[in-house]
Picture 1: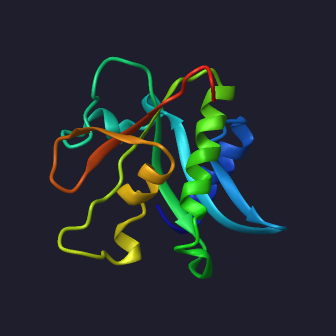
Picture 2: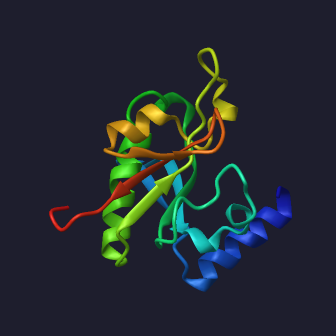
Length: 147
């Protein structure tokens, strides 16, 4: 979506009270955002062969990130993932999943890695749970009673 359609959808989310993601701040400046909701909130995941469910467990899905350009490569994604784990625990969930892009043969342009990179997920404590495609692993974090 773009333009007025995107604005209307975003306003609908705000008005509904649904929390579709988390925002990272540096002081008063918003520097990043991560989409995170229960997997069932994302229709596209229900029909994806590449990102099909690992098992029947209820999971929360991290589907995309945005980081302000001059804050990239500074740990914002990892900080958002750690905050996402805490958010999911607060909401009563115990598994967080992400679907990063693994670049073939090196670095990908930032526009193609909006789903994150495996290294950020690993730094946040996620482990690879499945891989149905060479470039789209599924990473998971299982929340234990200690976190």
